[in-house]
Length: 461
Image 1 (cartoon, rainbow, N blue to C red):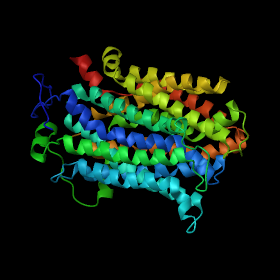
Image 2 (image 1 turned 180 degrees about the horizontal axis):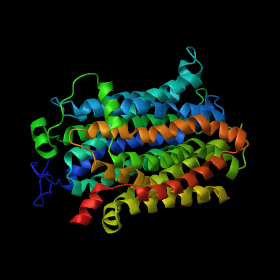
Image 3 (image 1 turned 90 degrees about the horizontal axis):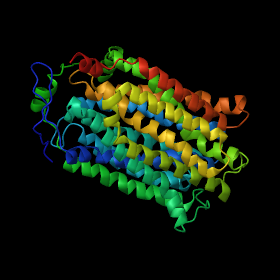
Image 4 (image 1 turned 60 degrees about the horizontal axis):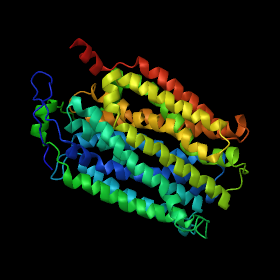
């Protein structure tokens, strides 16, 4: 698909051509693959804990298994970002990484619920954890270049729209991925763990997820065009040529990160520490605090019912995020990017804290409305703010390095979260959810102090 200019052109830096504005169809196709990625992420986020619990993991050990995701992301994303900035072939700059990640991710989605089939080699729990690691690495290979692609192709005036549409498509994929196990169970597919240790409705959901993931990525690869190097330089400027080892440049770029990126790091720490707690502990928190089940009752129909509720509620926050994402450009245009993000993070904090006070399981969906507002903003606003401060030729690497501020808080949580539940909270994971809400409120306060270069330009003009 051609990158189609419209009559309105972007005002840009001296010496650079104004980047053409894209039509809505081009922007949608550009982010269609992210919908497939989030479909897979939703299946992982909503079901990995109960899959690992069915293989014998203890609740206070879950954060250690979830550590795989941020550790892999911290390593993979900067490397992929660095090399995607320097890649150009017949497929493009970012698209080769989309496709490679999609193939590996689809294989991992199929293998995870079948980990018990390999128990002759190692215990199913460790095989499952290994497949989670492969899945996370593959997700990160496919995901990282999408943020850079939006910044590559869109002028600054369309980036809020671009990231918002990306968030909308992320939400659509996440809604279906989150609710699919419940839909299959309602359709009569068994939700009782069989010899594999994983219920059929979960297994089939992962098979469907692998198919959707691959098809969505192919849509972006086929229908999105990237600017070739010569044309790219006309819009972005000539990138500095670098020699030597990639790791040297990655560390140097990290040390010289823009001021805005450093400040957003604190916001991201609070936000993603909270999200990690939500993904890891919500199933057991709801099962014990709302349903009154014991912490060891992990293979019963009642526990799977609680798990289905949580997965469905996660679908609710993703649905809210999908719809609300389309409103973000208008809201940010009226009150500014930072205030928009702060208000949404506050709503997320209130939503998480409210889970402690619910007694009717159906109320979990209401709590997730606030989380949905925060999730839409987390997936869009930090990247919109950051993209205005990144130097030419560094979009891929800095989008990858920015992932450090997503993975580091999850690693910290993975190390301390389990012991806190066991030794401080007396085995009650509901308190981890309450703390997550408090930290989301802290993120709302800290974003107010972030330097947004684009807002300064607007004020001067």
